[in-house]
Figure 1 (cartoon, rainbow, N blue to C red):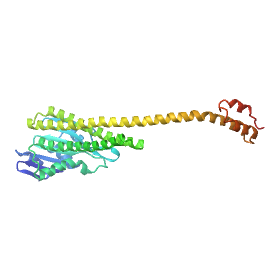
Figure 2 (cartoon, rainbow, N blue to C red):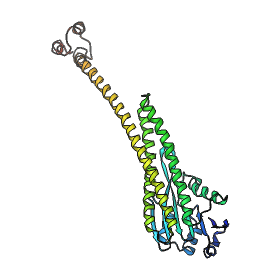
Figure 3 (cartoon, one colour):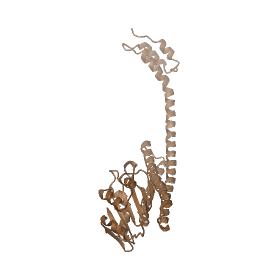
Figure 4 (cartoon, rainbow, N blue to C red):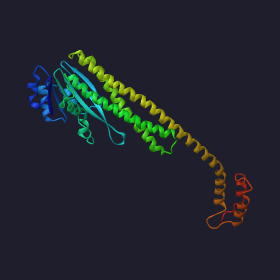
Length: 330
């Protein structure tokens, strides 16, 4: 755990055990970051910050949807950040926050084992580096959470921009009618759509959480509530851009599938014509093979007559004639 005290004089690091003394100070606020849930966090949060058991349970476990709870002197908010993994799978990196009048606690929830811890700490570490270097000096816990969540929103926006570039390249390949392996190309299209859809879902849900947080926040000044409104606007912008790009990608996919389906239909029609031509020949050869060419010996004279006359008479019309030449072996 890392404990920082932030006030007008700057930022100073403290031992987590100093948290009670820091909270008694009149000016400034504390930021406690918990990268991994531990016994120290299990003791410190309920004893010193009086965090409720239900919220602590949410911190210990992974939550698949964001949420917000209001308590008399704080907000508890659960948010997610995206991390694109192998095969287009998008991991949910959870960040839990207790936002009080003079403290902010950020808890990083349990991760999928394949996701490195550095990925989960990316946004909080960026903000911490800016604070430690003096490039950022938040004046309240809401100002600090605004900086963290805005960094998450910017990451989502950057991922969407990268996916938009990929979609543009996919659209070019479709319009150029390049020879693509249909299964592999459709997999690329649907992977890009899945990634955009996941980011859109995260952004839309995060926006709804902050919309609710704005209504619930009664202990913070109007300037801090305005920061929540700005975060809501950022999330809505990411969600809307993702949604419009999903619609565009859906159109590209439908065009490609329609063209592929048309090619398959034409091929099926050609196969049907071939089958109609070869079916009579197949039927005739079946009759001849079963009745003239037998297991013990071949009836040479009927076979020669059939082969000699086969090019002059329609095979279907010759079925009865061929049957009349049947001589079965004893």
